[in-house]
Image 1 (cartoon, rainbow, N blue to C red):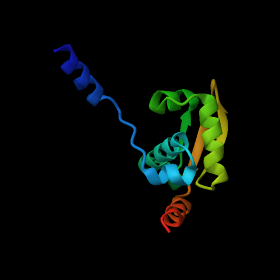
Image 2: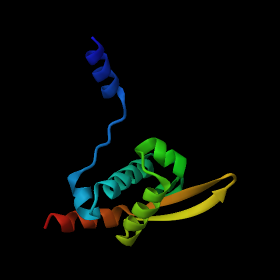
Image 3: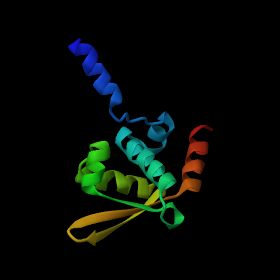
Image 4: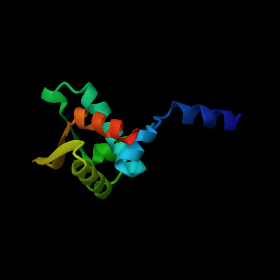
Length: 114
């Protein structure tokens, strides 16, 4: 019975799903996960131009990437021109504002399947 309860608990948890194409265009699973989450957050955002913001603590809670990992993979995605980010200090935390370049992502996906 304990095993069955454990699996019920695990299936109720958040699941990370990363399209293989995102791994291909970003070069790593972690960059692809961050891209996937950025696309999701932008798609549900109520802010102008689908911008959204998160703190490093919120990223860690959502996808278990540390501040250093978020910085590294955000830079990777910016270098690929897939997102833009800007850090603003809103007391007492650094908050990162993101914009997702959907057209550039679509172009990268098209180029990856040619």
